[in-house]
Length: 182
Image 1 (cartoon, rainbow, N blue to C red):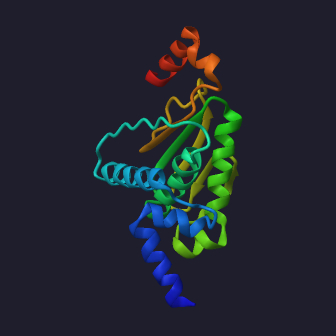
Image 2 (image 1 turned 90 degrees about the vertical axis):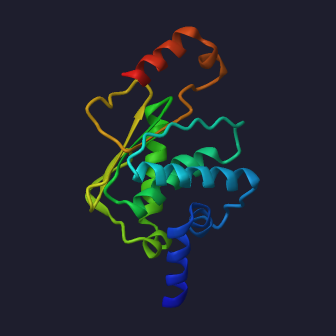
């Protein structure tokens, strides 16, 4: 029904939390998700004003941080601003590409296509390297991987360390820190 689609579009455009629930029927927000989506929505607004924003999200595993911040958030951002460049990174290129393919697949889903006019270019469909028809880009790389020379307006680093042993290693922390600063 056109009126239901129009209502869903309005809701998805106005609020990130509402978008999450619209595209993922299994998304059951707790107080944490309400807070996280509110903060991420404000981050997007600040990025759109040209501000530089850094946000660190530290929560235990299995809280939905990656799904919300690394898959749903970039898809929502590109729905509203299909011309933005995004880079996502994680401890391995494989995991970063998984985030990229999940985001890409979500944006190709029928529900998403009803909510936003953003479409992906068919000639750039790699898991971790694709574009919108409005020249927005999504690039995924492992920590330490080459992103030099690639600009971005939204950069997401999700789990730069594979496990506690890596996080406790001074050598590994130094390597990640040097990569981040480069």
